[in-house]
Length: 447
Image (cartoon, rainbow, N blue to C red; front, side):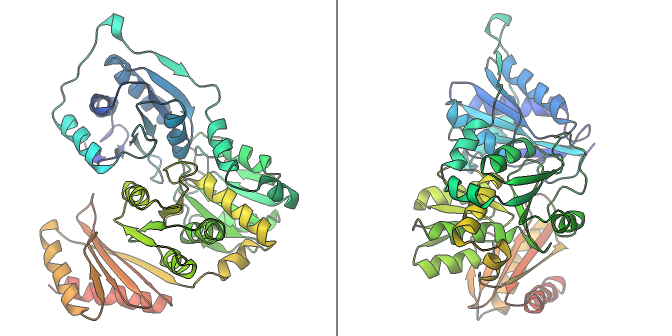
């Protein structure tokens, strides 16, 4: 039996192996012990195992005297909205994000409606490691209330950030691929409220993924062709818990996830000037846009919680991660595919331009990603070697080692969950980015 992979903000594992009802109950009981008074909101993505695990989560929380609010199947960003809307003590999302069907997981939310930050998460981990559950008697058990409509607060928050009537006038034809995850219900409501003619693939949230769940170009080959076949103006592709969004233009070209954030930043900064925050593994397109508009740019360590920390500390007007996760603080402090859809449609309507043209106007870069097996004891040594070799670069140890030149960058960082080191390089051409990764590999593998 494999152990679950546990971090400060959640866990994931193969159902029936590393992730069992017992593990789920122990974990949420540890979480509840660190939460302030009040109910805890529970929701899940569409995976087949989600209902079973959600029942275990509710049971564990109620057994220690906590009331729960059952949001049923809802997107991860929707959970963040609901925690704040109902002034809850926290939230638990049952999801394995983009992992294969045999996986599931738990993602923890603070009372601020955000993924649990590092300090609070460490306290939960300490309690999980030494479980002492404060089970209550029958007359003190928590109760559960079922939400009939978990989506409207999120819908209204997103609509308030765009010119909905301007979008309605354009009657965009939109293809949305929810891939049988949690995003279809709210996705349809949002797009139809914005006057779009919607083709929705994988609307039923039953977890029977029509293609591998991570929204990469390779996994979306069939969707690319479908965008062209139905004559859509734009294609949107969500991951199973709908916190990430990939974009396809009308010609069937995969713009991908890095462009989601950059396109949103380009649109937002035309109307609202202020700091922009991304993580250190995200394309420099957003940094270039911040410099173009003369606003501060802030870079955080990898991880949604770290980006949100940076956004709050610097009062950012927008932020996110290059995996297709835009974060609009006017809506919530969570990566949000619905924010991405609304902002991109608003940009197309305002400019009266196709999404492909808007993407082509952005600074052009290419990213290459690689990884190598490496024991954790060697990581510090090899990062020092890389820093010595690339003396002409500006180095940063915020998260692993990031090396920056005027026209390219290289990030080498150890995985938090596997004995590997990942390298990401970005340059003006794919060949230049690949060369950076090859140079790094030559240094890492010869030592």
